[in-house]
Length: 570
Image 1 (tube, rainbow, N blue to C red):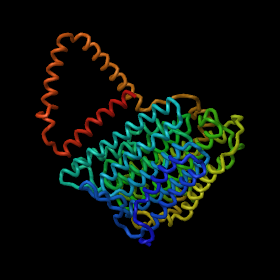
Image 2 (cartoon, rainbow, N blue to C red; image 1 turned 60 degrees about the vertical axis):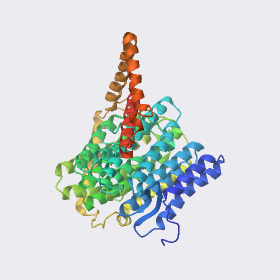
Image 3 (cartoon, rainbow, N blue to C red; image 1 turned 30 degrees about the vertical axis):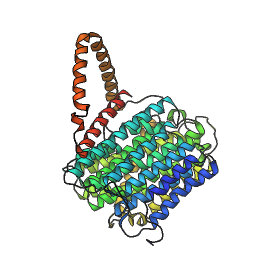
Image 4 (cartoon, rainbow, N blue to C red; image 1 turned 60 degrees about the horizontal axis):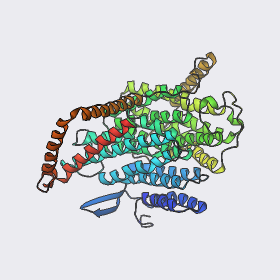
């Protein structure tokens, strides 16, 4: 089977399809291209059944490994291809050529990063994900989306700068360019870890997610939900498996979004917080680092991409038909959009880990691994977070969108292509839940786990029923936070406010110094000119040979400073 097709990275046809789609004005032809790209990628994925590194390109003294196919990249690559295909179906109604192109290039970049075998190839695709995905935010065309997209771009380019700087330090300090196990003790390890942490939305580094995803287009939010953060989980599993700090970072990630999601009125922003919560489970699994835990992280990433896409699709359909996803302005939509409501309920039940659905057979792997390794406090946090997931994604999303009070809005059902994409995603959620052995068969390690035990089913149902009872009781007593138009401040408000104030104060102080400097400024300018001549003249310091590694590090540092100032000023 390995000779059936040329062994090129499945990222290539997806990226090419995106570039071609951007050049094709004809709507019908363009949409065919958007569907063909992921299908060709799937054929390339299925053509390889022997682990190995393929598609090696030698250039500039380096070997760029573009297609490393192994137990870890296999499952992430497959679900990224599935997500790209579902996104193309979901976006068939949309006529925005730029959005078609950017969605596919972004998906292809995510695939390229997953299959990258070296850090330089990873860096290229890492930055391409940022540069291509920002157009899905800007495509909304509002001032708020422009500012959010600019902040998103700055923070993700900064992540790439940290990745490049850390990689150079790591490779030039006796390591190699291999994208493999690195660890925090390795030279440059902390920089690479922080680069991955930004994309994974670690606590205090998470705000870009809730800032940008809800401001993207109807299709854009669905596409964004699939790739960036799960790519970061993959990178952590590849390079930092078993790093203990990840256990505690992941536990915090599962818990804190619950409180924000409860009071949030924008239902797509609720899903963004929920995404943060689910990432925490995966990060805990990577931090534990056992075979069972890594299987849990991989399985959770796989099913999460599908059911989170389903939830974003359903809210996207509501936004497309109603023009808002504010909980305070919705309700009663099940009368107008019954199929969308049913698909949303399936996604909500899946993320809540109801038996016979995908979340039940995936999330339990991580919980079992935490208990097996004696992390009982973390296990309790994960159980609390599981109940929180049911409250904000399992109940709040469908309840306030489709039921609750009747808003009186009567609209058309979602377009057929949206319903088809949601139907496929819902079918996958049910199929994986009933026959988990097919998911377990593609996990990185052999699975010796049975999710459908009496204890597991009863315990999970007790948790779910208790959470549903608590929600119903709070609603009945009028103690549940009311859905009202509001803006909820997250931790980014503090440093953005302080950063903006600092930049403004600095410019004001500089203006005063310029005005008061007089002749002292003239003397200083002459001295500065002499120094610049000593540095930049043909006989100056910069004319001497500088090791390329050192220059790359300083370039990364300076670019990082510029990006930080730009982010704070934005």
